[in-house]
Image 1 (cartoon, rainbow, N blue to C red):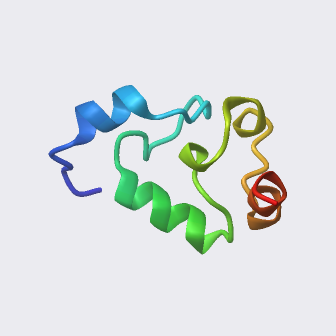
Image 2: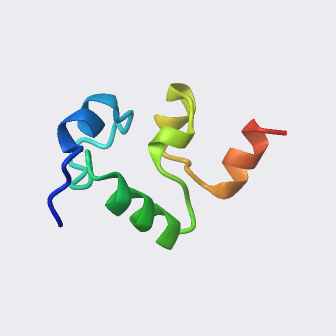
Length: 65
């Protein structure tokens, strides 16, 4: 993974609760990963939804109807 000059700041704001996430602090890699899996990253969801790990487009749309 490429070095990210914003890693420290990104990591301090990252709401991801996945304990061993290798992309924490690397927003570009995180977004690319989740979009490739047809989902959105943790930062797109409120904490109570993020903790369920349902990061689907469908769940996002339900939240924003």
